[in-house]
Image (cartoon, rainbow, N blue to C red; front, side, top):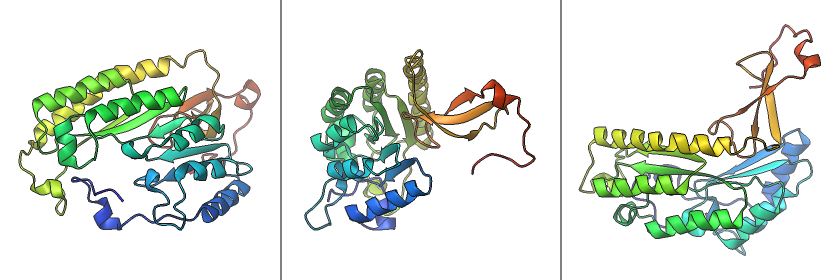
Length: 278
């Protein structure tokens, strides 16, 4: 297992990751699909660490291929992949299995070498840039999401400028940015070179301003394309719209798609009770 990141308190609170067997996961996905579920998200603090604690050390790539072939499943989505552990088997599975969403959430956190070292991430900025290029080569049409952390102890103005340059270059589909929060019990809580909270928040907002036109351009590039949409129910915006998501939109974090109701349904009487699914 990798060393714990300097800023993260989650492993301390939750304990070490434990892997479920491929058989138990397949049974659960099959039961969900039998009950009408069409999309399953695999979520772990580090999916790519899957299997380290199981006999035979099964890997994530073969696991997702197995789950992708469960009858009735339409979409399998992956959150979160550690940057240094994304192997060729996993990329091939995502690229080749039609049920696996061409979507990957890889939390990069930063690209400045000194900041990454202080964070104990185990890689440098060049590796982060190379990974983005590798992902896009391996998976045509990939939707890429990442998170970045600003204001970590030791983040200088030059380090932040390098992060801004990366956001411009990478043209990410979805980006979340967090300001550093000093958590007692983490290694980062005792590091020198603290960044004032106000400065960290200013940097967070600056990165999001940079990302907005990039994300808009990525969405506009979809114009004219036919996309499968998972319809989740009536829209809260209008009775004449349905709400759903395409494969590049994870539930609750990446926005949604609105679809006009067909004329025959739009004119049909509405039942007294709400149709919205919770």
